[in-house]
Image 1: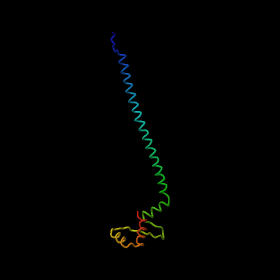
Image 2: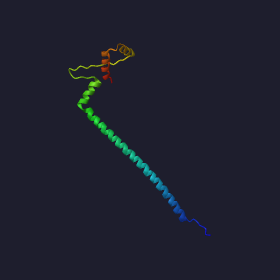
Image 3: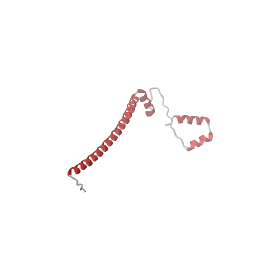
Image 4: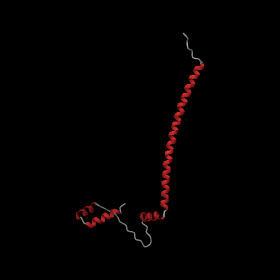
Length: 120
């Protein structure tokens, strides 16, 4: 029977194979992690580009004269010369609801429904 002895070359080759295997595993994992990060960043870039495009369109719309005039009328209650502003103050209490239900007045209900159109 022949005894198998492990020489230095065999040990070196086994160590080299183990080292290279570990390096391949680490490099592959690093590559896959970076690829996932790149894909996530690309999706984020696409999302931000869409949001940027939307906001640029909003800026264009907000700088148009019609928009500025509409906002001044609605939010600031401004009017042009010789115009009258009509303001509806909406207050509704339980007593008013009960009175309206009891009377059943057609015109009262009609005006309340009309006022609901102006509610914000």
